[in-house]
Each structure stands twice: as C-alpha cells, then as structure tokens.
Image 1: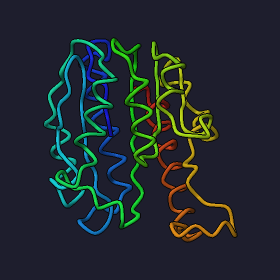
Image 2: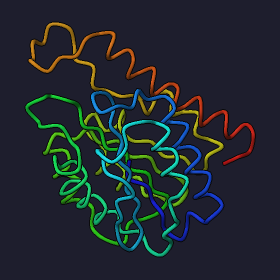
Image 3: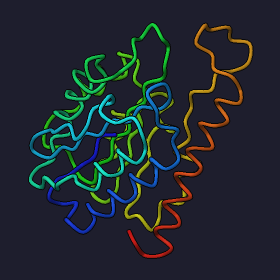
Length: 217
C-alpha cells in the first residue's frame, strides 16, 4: 500500500486512514507463507513505514500502522511509484521471487494532483508485473489515476469527490485478475482463490460504507 501523507490530507483524516488500513489488515491471512503487507507513505519525499518482510502477523502490522507519523508537505506521487518499483517489491524487502508466481498488488491512494511526473514509473510498475490499483479522493486527478491503474483501467481505478460518495466502488474497484476458463496459462489460480479475492474487495467496500455511514470519514 502506498499512502498519500501530504498536507492536504490533514492530520485528522490521516488518523482515520490509519484506522481504515488496519481494518483491511483484519481481512487478510497475514503470515510468512501467506499474505505479506508493506506500507509506504509519501509527501515531498518517500518513506517505507515497513517492508513486506518486517512483520509476520496482523497484530504487528496494525501496531506499526498506528505508530506511523504524518509527513505533511507536498505530493510526489511519481517519486513514490519509483520507490515502490525499485524497493518495495524487491526480494531484499520481502517480495517472493517472480518464479514463484505470487501475485504482486500495488494500491495507491491519493487526494491530490502529483507535483511530479508519474507516467514513467506508473508504466514501469505495470511492466514489472505489479497489478496496480489507484484510488483518488477530492482533488485527485482522473488522468493520473488512469495512468497508474492496470488494464482494464475502468476496473483498476476509482475516484470520488469525497468519502461519502464512494459506494460505486462495488462496481468500479474489483480485482480483475481471475483468468477466463480454458486460457491455459501456467499462472492460473483456482476459482475459489479468485472468489476469495473478489470477496476481499467487497469487504473493503463494505468497510468504507460502514465508516461513511457513521460520519467517520
């Protein structure tokens, strides 16, 4: 996860983002042999809050998230993407070798226009095999979100003017990595695994809706 920590997010909203991240972690089977989670925060610079191999349980991750300090300042999304490609998905930081065929998923959240170019590193991320999702809120720029998102773009990016109108994510923000039957690729995952991924996405949306209904976000 690559999280916008720029000044426009505001401290109170940043605390709520941390709470939301932790509720997502609750849905994952975190373990050395299961799901691995890494978190990067960016503003005018980029900081790895923790790499993929730092924590081996959901409890450890959640504690680290709550200790994360708000960076403020600018919005260098391109620099954050560069950092993600060069460091976050490296084997040194806990990514499994590509030969293991473990899906690599990058989720980028931003609430504003990037102050640097994102095109080169957004493309490099996808070329390296990372399935990219982009979520924008408020002053985020649709063109940038589309540039970050994997194909088909419509299923890998979402934008909302504010958190209270994000219910359309159910249709716009589903993981589109379940292969068509009979395609024959060696990396095809089982139907139950794909169903689990879609369920994860549905649960994510349910959490968002629950938070907005209580006026938390």
